[in-house]
Length: 433
Image (cartoon, rainbow, N blue to C red):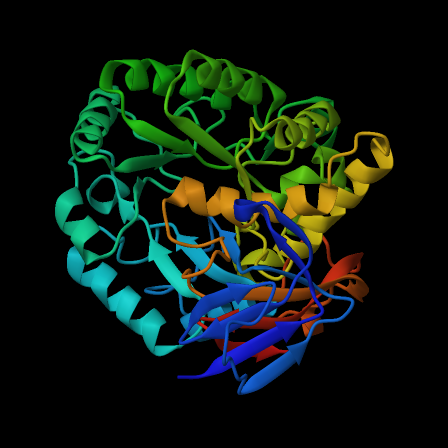
């Protein structure tokens, strides 16, 4: 068995309340001890993390790997390498591949292909309905056996509410989580920017906030009837967060995430029709963005995800309205989470909370809890999936600096803090800068 000693690092492990200088001792792919070495421990490899933060590997709740079906946009190899460079050791992938992940064989093949890469752990979401067409339910039990951790419709809303109710009742019977991005199937359909003065001025068709809130009202009514556990993906508006806050207070079994781009950007960042700022859901107003940041702080928002959606040049370098929505994010998740922590520390220096630890929690322990996967913790006996990073080191986002095949992000040219120095998966150093 291989043994590893990570010494002199600042260990941040929110799941276990650790935030301070601690050594980590790893054997056989698992955490053997935290703090002091167990009797007779000899390290095959010693990693000096002086001046660096040692945290659980990041858990990303939405990363499109583009396989099967869209290999021209990205491959498992390129995107799992991007995950390692971003410190991501576990990721959840939506079912909108081609073919759709609605058959156990497809899920098994994806899991097998990902495993042979020896990189990050891949946790697929199964399709909630066959072909994501919103008509007939998939065999959820068989898909779960094949390795799905939940069921989703990706960007395809279910028009027939009866189908959604049946799906939620079925999921509740077996204790599965339904992952939904709240969007009304009709309002805002075909819209490409946030409905507001800016979209009107630019002549862009709008997606109003009520597209999100009407869907949320429906989902919560169906939850009351079915008691199903629901995870809401990529919430984008202040009004939506208010509804979720109320639903949580009522005791509904609901969690939610936000795309990390939405923590920082607003519809004004479209600028002069920048296709890199074309995302789904669209960037909303400054008030919405501020509500997202506050929701992360008060716990309404459970986690941040990269919403990694690699798009190739042919589909992105087009007029704003014709460009494919999506941005690359696996390698930006850590830096953008740290940026949120820095902004929060500047805004509330007297708050006393540890912003760095809170940011790490949103992309490790909290995300793992939402997904229901064994990750995001460095307790003794847990898998040694670890991210070692320098929170102060700065880097410039450029297509050359990204391992992902998707080079398009609204943050091109930005200087961000937080460089991953090493990513360890199951006790093995999988990436080292």
